[in-house]
Image (cartoon, rainbow, N blue to C red):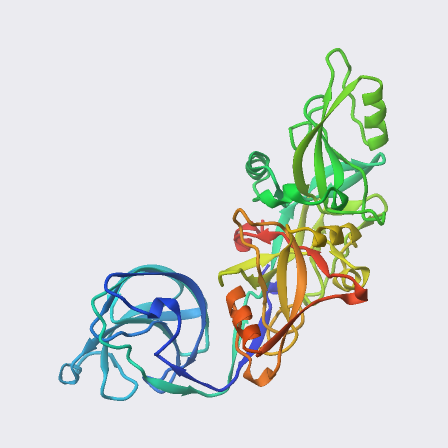
Length: 474
């Protein structure tokens, strides 16, 4: 599947960088906790004058960091642990210095693309001979009473770096269902009920997310899906025949969100496979079936439906394409998982199986779901920020990856309203990786943020988060 990996080029503008950083973890107190996850972009190594360098924990005079670090990078990187030493003790060992006066001895960890290790030292950094991007999680402490933060300023010349895995393929198992006595293939990405999420995850070997806020999605944004709890054995949610849908993408009322209704055969009735809502309602009227509303909402995008299917491509380019392959034999659909940053800067991935309005949906080659707009008027929608200019990359509009307001926690809901971020001066752009980054730049007038409203309608996408996409390639 490696042939689908995108190599995106990002240009980093010239700017001055100081070790006197403003990140919260650089502000030291005696026995202060250090805990964060962040993505770093390398720059020219100011200590050696060659190669690439990314500082993770800035040096603080008279204090020491201790803890553990886990990282993943697009190229092999060395981990450097810096130890402040007197200049007379610097001979005969690897050292690092910006100004030739403040000297650090080095502990050098073998270059790898990923790893975990424990450290104790005055600072921690990554180094490589080529440009790199690294995401690291640090859990530790800074000990001692620092006298001052060491301020060492150096200049980064304009350069280009490669970001790997901006968009990657993810294979998702398809399930069988029915509409109007015709066959449907669909996926389940999310459920408002944790028991159902856990059960389906175990059953199909693919993570169905628990999205509690889906329960509060407006009824006007939902369809009804009928799931059998007894009768003919099959691969349905409860282990019986496939689910029955009330609408498909061929109808303008289509929505991927569905309210779950259970269907049970009454005692003394002879079960048979039922393939349409009309037949279910008739059997209920004849007192053969019992229907029960569950107050559970599921995200069930359709992939194949009577007379149609979601568009695919045979191209290795992932531009404006959401589905790469539909394999009916293995019953899997391969989506493009788009890279983004979560609200706190953690890297995440999402897919887009449906959207509204029609114009953007057609461009993305996904079904139109006008009913998704109904959720925009509620308070249960997520926000997705896409970038119109600034740092170039593999984002939807050709610039940096987007930022989501939703994460996999009690706030998670897989429906996103799109806003556009535009830099006032594109030459001064830097990567913005968190919601607070965007809000800070909006407050000082560096960026403008506006709702995306193509065709005078809010731009809404079905945006299920895909956890650990590489492990779900199948």
